[in-house]
Image (tube, rainbow, N blue to C red; front, side):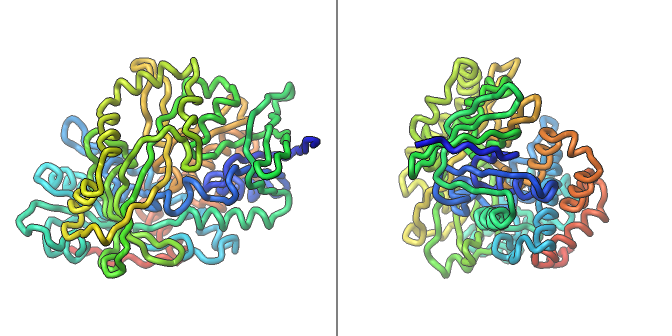
Amino acid sequence: MDKIITEPDVVLIGAGIMSATLGVMLKQLQPDLTIEIHERLDEVAAESSDAWNNAGTGHSAFCELNYTPEKADGSIDISKADVIAEWFEQSRQFWAFLVERGIISDPKAFIRSVPHMSFVWGDKNVSFLRKRYQAMTSSPLFQGMQYSEDFDQLHQWMPLIMKGRNRNEKVAATRMEVGTDVNFGCLTRQLFKHLKEMGGVELFRNHEVRSFKRKDNGHWSVRIKDLTTGQKRRARTKFVFIGAGGGSLPLLLATGIPEGKGFGGFPVSGQWLKCTNPEIIAQHQAKVYGKASVGSPPMSVPHLDTRVINGEKALLFGPYAGFTTKFLKKGSFFDLPLSIKVNNLRPLLAAGYTNIPLTKYLINQVMQSPEDRLQSLKEYVPTAQGDDWELEVAGQRVQVIKKDAKKGGVLEFGTEMVSAADGSVAALLGASPGASTAVSIMVDLIHKCFPQKAASPEWKEKIKQMIPTYGMSLAKNPQLCEETRAFTGRLLQLQEPHPVQS
């Protein structure tokens, strides 16, 4: 069987939210670009972008306590929260642009208004949340945040969580009405539907990228296999983006670029408890995040989570972390062993040594019984009954491990973009906040990998059309922040926030 050889301008590996976002952006910036997308599964958005595999919170730092650490002097650092909130506002602007242009016809299919809340108990945690509230409301991005320690007010906000709880217990919560639930699987499918309707774009399912070869002219030859027919292909291209979720690390290492050396990955699996009782699901309407256990990864921050999936309301609690050597939910148990190379062995060992509490946490999670999981749930839903909840397998995440001059290697819990010096190949590694900030990540990638075009007046103007506040700070401009949020809210058909109670 003869090889099929193609010469697209761009090759995107992985049919998730990252490739979909980048593909749509590039076609907006330069409509005559030819693009190939290669996905190893038989459908798009089936791994990290899928609704059941992705928290769907629309990470905007409203409720995620791990984005606002307490400093040694007792003050709260909101700098990371400001950045993530700003990035999510850019995502909203891009999605609103797509609605305005008719690229997305029904925003309610992928985004809904769901209040974001943080909930804590105990004197120390209540003190932390109070200080966090005071610090965050100094930023325009968190105007409208409400705070309460009043039992009756909290019962009104989240009756399911407060029912059966001792009125004398020290509790507190914050609430942001402008929070959202995002079905990134649905959004990804809408973006790929649009891409396939455009000229010069081909999507190949059941196609696995096997290797890369750098050509003398700086271009890449990508070797691909059709897993259904066995047909071999080669795509010769100027630019490759590796957006394959947990599968990005092995592919990055396969490119052999110097910038990828020293990177490793630590896989963390997850599970949810999914409510099966419609009466209980109806009692909760919020995303309520608590504090993570000591040593646990940020993706394991416990939350009681209202979701809207395929038009139906759902209620999840978790996630419960676990360990597997797979890098993808539908991956291989050999993923982790095969990712260990001479150049990343030291960072892997060093990161393992300095993260012993995480190892202990994961062992404890893996050994949990159904009764243990129910007990964790009862901390948030005191009246929970095991018969009303069932276990659902969540997505797979690969946390980034990279070189560190002092420690040898460090475990990172965010996202990491790794690109070749000449911008010919880029890979996205890591997890949260991931999908929620895909728009900002992809714009940064465009500036790194297409610097001359990104600096041109034509591309600058088009980027401003897609993201009107790009290059401006909403955190420093209260009026612009309010106007932008109101504008995108109307186009995305989100609910107007209720007036803030004094």
